[in-house]
Length: 298
Image 1 (cartoon, helix red, strand yellow):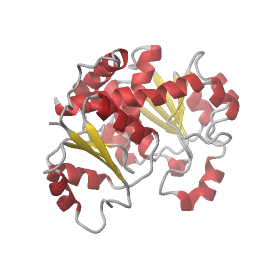
Image 2 (spheres, rainbow, N blue to C red):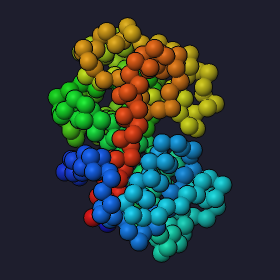
Image 3 (cartoon, rainbow, N blue to C red):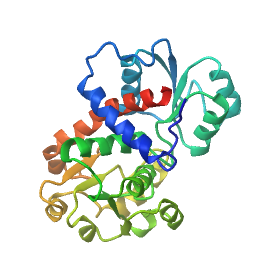
């Protein structure tokens, strides 16, 4: 039994195995004899709304032979009412694994500790490990090994997605540049903890030069809606557009973890020109998460 709670805590050997197995699972998706979750029921506990994460996990669990049921914020509220450790101990006696999408990282860690069942972080305010594993898998599929490459994250560099990119860069030996206003750059503590070659700058043009990947995410993450007006104003210049594309390497991948707000973090024409990559990236959530589920029960 294994947990995927954070890329920071995931050994490199396990990252490599998940990515390697994801390629096989994608290539052999139609095989009907690979059912590592046969006879198992998994709970999806989501305090935050989701499209891609929920669908990919539900489909993935079923394709691996298991059954899944979904509980949203109205059904179960992690961190409110009944203590998490009590909810965890109840579910741990009834289900075989849990996929959790919530706010506090500590909530998912406490759930894993007390449930004693495989627990997967489907997003917290601190990290989004499944997303970044799928992103790296997509790069490897389209361009080969990521070691030694340059990934540029543009926008809110202090949120969960770039934080997981930070830990991935340190573990897999690629350069990560974060182009963000100073108030939206990751903390010095996170950077020191991660190690690796991480460059933070408020100069988008400088960051984008020679990039192998240009990556962005929404400017207003869930739970930050009250800051929307200020964020839009401060981040307005941090957009992937044609000017930025021309600064990157020829053939650089443009990636977005979706949902995308055209005209804000990414230009409409640039998004559509790179839609094949972006929606392959979204599809790969399914294959990588199947690999994570298989890894968790092996």
